[in-house]
Amino acid sequence: MMYQILIVDDEKAERDVIHFLLNKYNFPFQIKEAANGKEALDVLKKSSVDLLITDVKMPFIDGIELVTCVRKLFPKIEIIFFSGHDDFSYVKKALILGADNYILKPVKPSEFKETMEKVSENLQTYKTEQEDKKFNEEFIKKHILYRIINQTPIEMLEKEHAYLNFSFLNDYNRMLLIHSDQSFWNTLSERENLQFDEEISKIIPNTTYDLIHLNPSQVILLFKDNPNKLISYRQLGENIHQQLYKVYGINCFFSVSEEMKTKDSIFQTYNQLDQYLDDRFFHPHTYVYPIDSITTTTRSFMAEDEALIINIENAIQQMDTNKLKEQINQLIHKHEKHMGTSHVYIRFLFSKLFQNLAKVLPSYQSEKINKEIECLYTYTHFKDIKHSITKITQQVVQKLNEEKNSSNNNIRIVQQYIHDHIDVDLSLELLAEKVYLSPGYLSDRFRQETGFGINKYIKNVRMAKTKELLRDTNRKVNDISKAVGYNSVSYFIKNFREHYGVSPKKYREMNKTEDGME
Image (cartoon, rainbow, N blue to C red; front, side, top):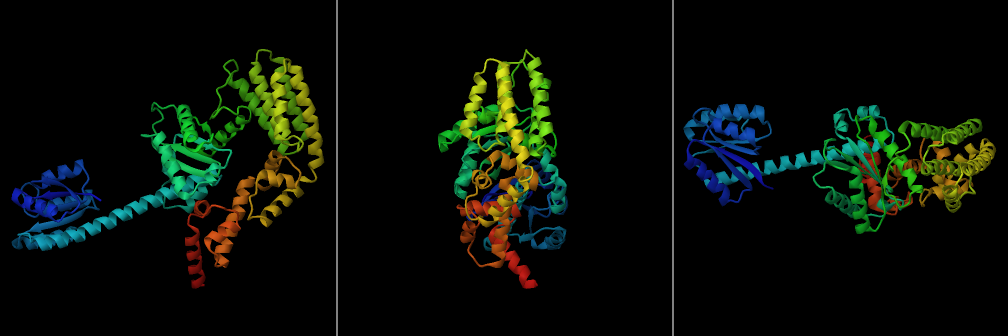
């Protein structure tokens, strides 16, 4: 590692001696020089220096004054005095002021070499400590972002990390969500994950961002660039998609946010981006979202429709069949009367509604839903769309009425199955089969009943079981990884560290220490 050194002496011959000895012993320093304390301060204010070597007696500003100023401006800099025997009283004063060492004139090469070796070792130690500190701070910050996106309140995190300044959250102004339907990041080793991160950095050079591996299917890029910077984030998504397909052979989907104003908008922004990706069901060959709105349909008009769709989703989750029928009738009535709306938009809107309704019905598998939606896109009259929606609404109302009394029991069955089979791959489809529900409907009901998404609930159970095994057994981390359902040990360790802030090995060591104290 190369360090910066500043040699200050009013005699050039003395500076040349130090210069010569540094080169002779191959010390890793880039050398700057100054003829007096005033020049030295000018150099220090323009560029950073790791080590200052200064004479005591100099014109304008002597060594004592220089050190006094430097310690105020640059408290971490290493300082060495060199001076004659007659000036040793000054050297003692300099040491009191904060100089780290001294060299007597005339300089003895062996003493100089010994002193510089100590200084180089100090500099290396300090640099390593600073790098470790920076790495730990970056890790903590990413861990905090990960938890915010997973619905942990910022106020709670501020209490947990009272030593940290949370203003860094305001640095982010854009978010890009990368989604893979193949749970791609679960298949990569730790080294391959690092290679993936490097691949992203090649695609978007000269751009400041943080990358967060959120789960096996999703990665988030949080950008810190000036929001006025000339950069098209949608085009960025297209570029990343093309490169990832070229390198890894996978088609990822990208969801691009508007500008984020405050730290409180990070979680809401992620939710919005995740919702945008719902539309990929209708556009399997579109990879960047949100899709541009139909220009003939006003934003307010579409906002009303979106509100009705959300109300319908809520009614399904709450099993409120009266509200469900009321909101669907309102949506149908609105578009029966509004003849100027784009036919493409109408088909898109009611296809989305059909998909939400079909999630309730186990008989509607993906193939059947696709066929029904294809029909919706071929209808030439709105009455045909209305008939299709009315028919499936009746089926959904009947199904919801049947399940009002049994839904809670289904959730308990799923929870117990998760706890009993934590060592196997627990897909949403598998769990839905156990209680004879559609995957989408089970997902919605599970979140409503427990307050967690199924994937997060599974992860929490796995992490809790991991803590138990680390604490109460001597099983190897590799064995524990398999016992809680992770095939990739590196991915298991990464998940545990993200969840608890320490590695499994470190957790076990800390727990044993605590047990020993008890």
